[in-house]
Image (cartoon, rainbow, N blue to C red):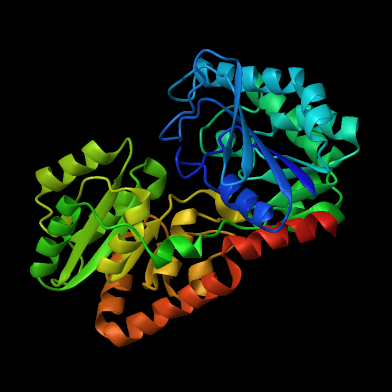
Length: 408
């Protein structure tokens, strides 16, 4: 089978996020399929941008996957620059549709760029080759920018996004959602229910077999915290408002005396959180420098309890599937999960304690409870989550599940 995967933000091990397109494509290649990924040359979540050397398009092969990068302009934030970046990618893809269809002749075309407007060039390519058209949903646009970003439903950008979303639900042969609780909403926007399938995020189990060593500075800092005694509560990820890290800081003074909180990551809120720790004298909170993604398994191995939190928001009624949560489960550590959502893997698979979001005292009680039950019970709880991931959320399993959904 020939699979054309359109994902504006697609990355690779050498480029950084977004990793899901790479992991799925790699497994499809290993299964004997041919995969062409089409992506933008610039993405705000990519660590390294592909080198175009002034060309409007370049191609390269990564682990058997053919990548085609279309030149787009850089941007920062969510303003006009990002809109122009999106428009230039869509125009390049539309303009190149006939050549893509003629050269690659896909059997399946997957539109998967977070925003839904790539469905228009994707359908054009699918019609030229008679391919099946798949719409993959990462986040519900335009609901996400409306409910999380406060944009008006009458904003011109939101109107265009809504037209594209409705078009995708009507015209795609299959709709694959990362979020598990979106069927009813999608039906309300015109999707026939038989089109729906859910394939969540997952992990590459091989990366966990031989993880990279922690940077010497981070390893020394964690050892110093461990030397203080007690239980380490860890967070690895982005420092953003949506990650509810202030709530964990608020909970720090309510924790048992033997608890230490350790953060690693980067993001826009890092300096502000550092200032809070300093100004409020939070001696049991330690914010370390960022670490490479490949070393995260070793960081999680060094802690005792993992924390993930969310801001209260009605949007999460459609479900969640964060990569960080899958990493935490794979680490075999019990999880404190502050969330109210349509699904909750932590409570569903008994691998930690779930509490209401935005409640520091509830977080503190959960951490103190995990401390009180002792190491053996914490390890048993963590291993329950790890076994679920190994059985259900590795990318070989998810890639097969994705193709079965398409073929079914």
